[in-house]
Length: 204
Length: 204
DNA sequence: CGCATAGTTGACTACGCTCAACCCTGGTGG
DNA sequence: CCACCAGGGTTGAGCGTAGTCAACTATGCG
Image 1 (spheres, each protein chain N blue to C red):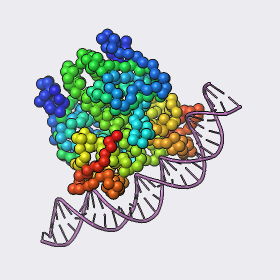
Image 2: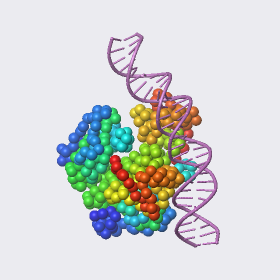
Image 3: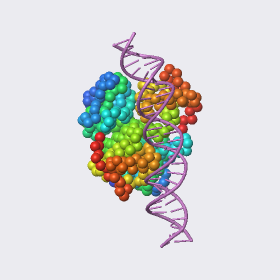
Image 4: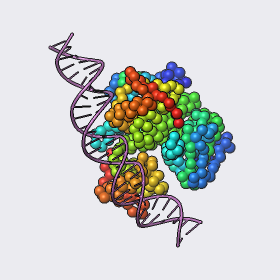
């Protein structure tokens, strides 16, 4: 029973679920809309954005495959931010009421969702921790190590433009670029063909 | 059925739960310890911290009354950060296995917890959004409005030293101080007796 | 072959950090 | 009761670093 594999769900939920294909740039929902659907990203990438007073947009979160989206739809009435696909994506849409009912009936499903939520909290915590590192090159280095850690690897490859990575780190593209060149100059990393390998990683 | 009111819980969970009094500065758990207990803060304030390479400590999160703590204890094996009471606090300790069992048996309980988790995700999102505002006075203003909004009020009163607030905002105490005086000078706020009242709030 | 976009590099600016001094309050002890 | 001290808060001066604006290159696409 896995929220990302519709076939594994109980039939009554399968009936309620819809799968949506969205192209890059397409809008999934806008802030203020009736929040009646919770999404899971099967493939692709969706970003959550918020519009500030000064007509700029801030990227709150980038949701990749295997992550949930708009969890607030479970208990809140309206979306507090907008969702736009960064790349062509497939998302599973769970209508709120049916999902809530299924969560009550199937503890496995509830546990699955709770795991997702807890993991998301963890990743937010990591992102906030990164923001507390002022020096750009150190923040970037920490970020790279964090990405490499799970796979126990020393190689990191980005599937998205560096400017998006910069935004996630809270930097401008220029600053990220300089940070990377500096790390390379210092011998901490090497770059080739868009993939980064880290050296001497005393992962804290 | 409310996770912060032990009396409202099913008896088998009541038996498993313990309530702890901790004084300011006291340690609840340390990073690396066996993560077998999830906590809810009844009263007081507990901060989650992480130790960086350079022996400094970073405050990841300040958990107040009515919030959960160490949710990762549900599914992870070790605590990834430490918890220290900022003030004398009462916390409810839920042993992991018993809690998981109860969550499976009582959908209301599960829903309650999911609400907590979703709310926490929301608050993280807000904090992250704040961090994207560079100018200190604007970030502070947004923060104040965010705090005032729920009570539909224009008055904010801090129950903790400004230096802690500064840390949560990602500033040094000096910067926060300057930002506040600037906001006051610009007529956006007024300060008196440690409480802040905001004016002309076009809450976005 | 343009055109758009991403990435890089440079020069300059701006703003938050650091260090320092100072004020103020509360608590402690003579 | 006052002297002393500690900590929080404020203010000032100078510095460092990320942002901004700009130009240039490289790549991909119509």
